Image (cartoon, rainbow, N blue to C red):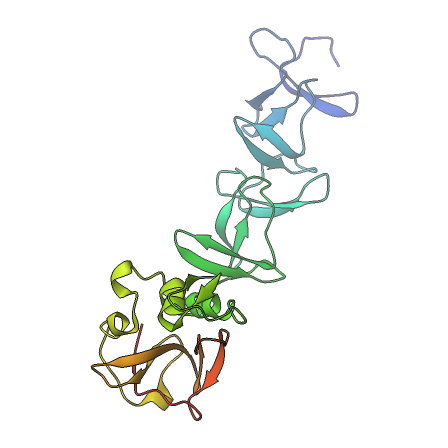
Length: 251
């Protein structure tokens, strides 16, 4: 307003620009510190930037009112989607804690993931319709794996979804090695317990004597189990009160 050349952040034509203190030229595509100490991002036409912006190999969010970088907040982009930004302002992905809950953000889209199961570092999580992540125990995951095969036919020697025998279903659901393929071998996986009506979910139920079991099933708790019964049948749920196991092993 006195005709002198300007430097730093300056208001012009309804927005803000940054002019280099040495060259006096407008600065484009850079993150610069204003004369009052705060930092701002300027675009390829020199205008100050707001919303989600790509910079230095990642994304940041700049407040539409203050133009400042936003840290530690969950913000809505100018196109409507929501993103989480960390304590250095960078967009976050993977498992993240926010306001006392854990969420998962897609590593490619950066958006919150909902209504699905994920596995991170060999740990399984369920993401509900709000995206809140709850860890699924290994036992639950393995029981669910076995239950997913209900209706698959019994096949002698089978240990794939094409067909299972009793120990083949256990081997497949629990990911056991070849040394624990048979019912007899699986009976060596732990201590034999005989209060079978109290067998917890995920334990292995054995039928026959301690030294010579002839059938194995996976406990669902409360006196029920999933198993591959016999030739001509399919993987299904059974009941201890009708076909009672002799002992069980906790897994």
